[in-house]
Length: 411
Image (cartoon, rainbow, N blue to C red; front, side):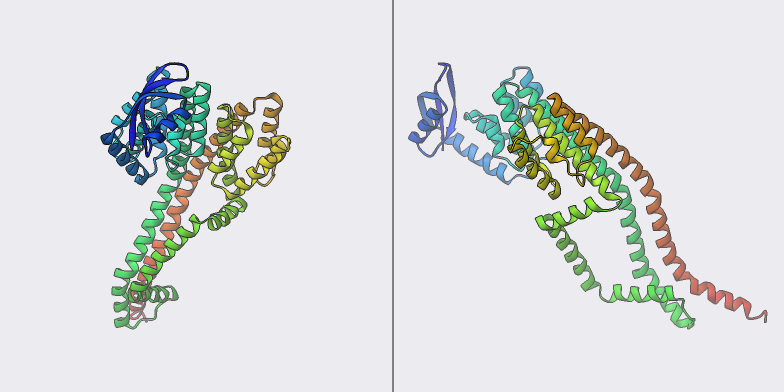
């Protein structure tokens, strides 16, 4: 249940709000721990029902997207910088947000802040929407009185991560569509067109080339056992997705990608860019190095880099420089290691890490553009060869028959 209260804080300032508690005495004790002396406190039945409903909806809501996070932090930083009270700022953003998703989460966060919870604590109630880095930076901003700056940094971080994800998806979308279309065309040819040619070939009793025989055999399998092949393909895809979502499956795939001859350096470059940006942002937000390493480790998806950061935490706890512990040549390039060492010597490790991240992101973006420009003609060529090969195999017996028929009278 919820209790509305009025009273004074430890500085003598009049305060009011609401707090969740199971009983009157528990509410008084919770206020006392917050340094609030309650003069009047009473239960709010309607508010309790509304808050409980909002929290249940928030818990059942989906994950907030990076785009929504970026807009939310940017708008909130502007409102906080203009001295708008936090509750009013949250209420304004909530009202202009679309139904569901972020709006449901914001309703619960606003309720919690109205009841006296710190903003970082309210964010912690929604771990699917706000990761440990968000919560830590907000807490640091609250304690240092720099909440607007931290929110601005979070907005920039979410926007950069969104741009990287958008670049990767954009580079792979068009080739993926081409591959899907090509396989669809081939399956349609095998299932609907080739059987008609097969009947014609049987009636003419003409010898068939090996490629045509193979396609006819494949067509018969697809048409005769589709009821088993279709569920099997779906089950295989679902099993692969579940395996990739497991810790062991993702670790195996990640290790393979990191060590792949051509793709490995690219995967390491993206992982290093993410690591340096997260770590640099946290250090610039006045988070101590050990906490920054831990929070970065919790946000990194690569199992190999998680192990690397664990080793870094152990070494830093013993007083060793970060550059010495992070200098794994299989995961971190020498230039990044030297930049970190330079930042430690100058006491500017945060800005240095952010500069390294900017440099890596620029290189990665250029690589994705080049990859997209190269892969499109390759996929088009492969698709043309595949579809053309099927078509030629279908018509080749007809060409042979026509050639034989045309050569008969000449003899």
